[in-house]
Structure formats: C-alpha cells, structure tokens
Image (tube, rainbow, N blue to C red; front, side, top):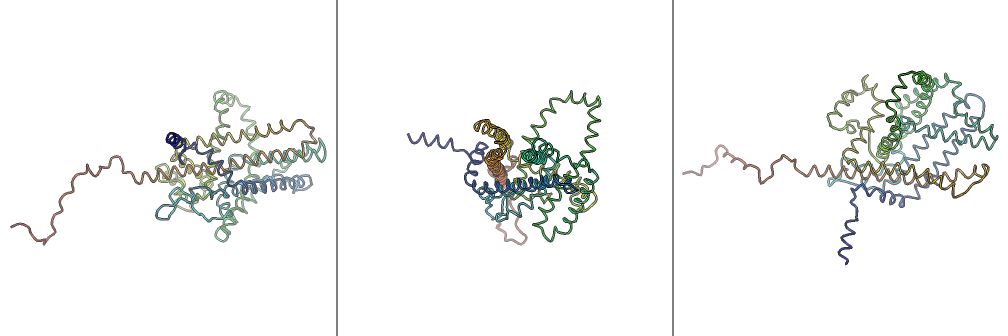
Length: 446
C-alpha cells in the first residue's frame, strides 16, 4: 500500500522549474520573512503619512512654498515607495536559490545574481534610476498623487468640514496658476541632477544613485506638469477633429483592451526587471543587457554604445536607460518560456483584484457607521489589507524571478553539455587518417 502512495507523492511533488510552484514558493517566502517585511512596510507607511501630512500643512500656507509643496510631496512619496520596495525585496533574497547558485569553478552562472553580501543601500542605489524611469514612464506617480489628494480631502474635512475638504482636493491644482515657476524648477532640477552625476559619481558611488533618483523624480514631475499644460490644450483640439472620431470608432476595441494589457502584462514585466535589479542584476553593462543577437547588434549600433560621449550616444542615453531593462526582461522571459511569465501575470493581477475585494469585504463585515466614525478607522483597514497583499506581491516577484533564472540557467547548462544536432556521434565519425611518420623515423620495412 505504501508503494502506490509513494508513487502518488512523487507525482504530486512539483519540479523546482515548474510554473505551478509559484503560489507555494510565494507563501513559503512570505511565511519565512513575514517579520522584516512587516517592519519595512509599516515604516514606509508611517513615512508616507508623515510626508503627506507635512505637504498638506505646507499647502495650506501662503507663498511659493505652498505652491510647490504638493508636487514636492508627490516626489518624496515616490522616493519612499522606491526605498520601501527595495528594502522589502532585498530582505527576501536569502531565501532565493539563484542568489547562492554557483558553478563548479566558483563563479556565478551567467544568469544568476551575484553580490551575495551586497548591502541594501548599494542595491537601492543601483535600482534607483531604473525604478524611477519606469515608475514615471508608466504614470505610477498618479497613484501617489491620488492618495495625497484623498488624504488632504479627508484631513480638510476633519479640520474645516465640507469647505476644508474642497480646499484639500484643490491642493494639487495650485501650481496651475504658476506655470512659469514650474518651468524654472524643471530647469533647476535638471541642472542640479547633471552636476550631481558629473561631480559625485566617482567620489560617492553609493550615494549618487538615490540622490540622482530623487532629483530625476522632481525634474520629471515638474516637467510632466509643464508639458501637460500644453498637451491638454493640444488634446482638446485634436479630439474635436473628425479624424479622431473615425480613429476611435475603428480602434475602439483595441483602445478598451490596452489599459488592462498595459497593467497586467507590461506592468508585470517591468516589476520583474525592477526586482531583478534590486536582487543583484547589473543593467549597467549595456552590452550584456542587449545580448549577442542580430537585433541587439543593430540597437547597439544605433545607440553608438561603443562611442562613449559621442553626440549620438549622449542623445540616445535617456531612451536606452528607459528601454534596455525592458529589453533584458523580454530576453529573460523568452529564454525561460512563456508559461512561467503567464502564470506570474495571472497571479500578479489576481493579487491586485484580491486586495480591492478584501478591502470591500472588510468594510461590509465592520458594518455601516457615520462618516465621523469611519474617518480615523479607514486608514487602519487600508493598512491591514495593504500589508497582507504587499507582502504577497513582493514574495511573488522574488519567487517568479527565482523561477525564471533557474529555468534559464538549466537550459544554458543543457545547451553547453548537449552536442549540436548536426554534429556526428563518435560511433558514426569517420576514422582518423593515419599520421605520416616524421622525417628521420626508423623504417620497419626490409
């Protein structure tokens, strides 16, 4: 009887390279590192609340500081998000096999992450710019702005009733009256960012990453705000044209599918890359990131990677910083197979939906109460739901990255061992020709 049970147990035991292992691997990481993950998440939430409260108080004052306080607050929220995410991902790296995977020669395998003793500050400095570029390019800062507006509206209602709530909602709109100031601040942040990278990159390599990331955030935020003023006017003119009606009518289904595809597939790919950078992947070597394919060589030629500081290399540097990590992620997904990535996307989207459903269910279980009763308790419900699902989200990212790198490493090792299909086997190989005797050898003839 034990033999059939043992056979069934062996069949049910999943391979470490199976995509079906992702849920269990995520739960294992969450159970093992629940205390440090809870600590970092709680610290991040406290910092976020303090920054939002300070931004609300500054926004209620008069003067230039009150005008720019909301956008500076959003910039600090992005920095806190980067720091919290990096610390949470970094603290689970000890539970990942790929961090410790080493070849017989003692060197890390080509796709495994290194820097086993790397500090969290170094990992954060290396991940700062990729994180900020992706965070801003995909509009994630709008979530921070929305959270700040909600907090300002709630605090305004507590302090001044309905009028205070309206004033709190309007804090983010205060800069619209000072577009020239926004342009000046955009230029100032850009100049300071360039000077910091130029003067401190060699002297303080660990510090320049987070500092450049903070300056990049604020430069981008004020730049985005300035451009949006012109873009909104152009968008109003374009959407009033008949051509837009024809285009929206023809591409209506595609336009409806794009937002969920962007969040569920492309957004998941971006987070995988960010997690990989925090866990040890170095995207600074552009040749390694691109690979050796024909397309990679063309991209390297267009970007003039070999001609450092040439006009074309400088002009394409920002675009490469934004796109090369995504290219690296696509290579990782292609070489590991589509099933692991598809499973990860499904679970990643399910966590997002589950967090919203859990929050609504918690409100239903608590029951109906008046607004004054809910105001101090809503943040606690949001914190509890956010804690559980953020821990699961971080552990899922780490487990998915571990799975993909494991599969790629195994495939790379298999290709190195197996001979090519067209290579002749030893049995079928033609006999080696006889080696002619060297000049002066003794003769065996009569």
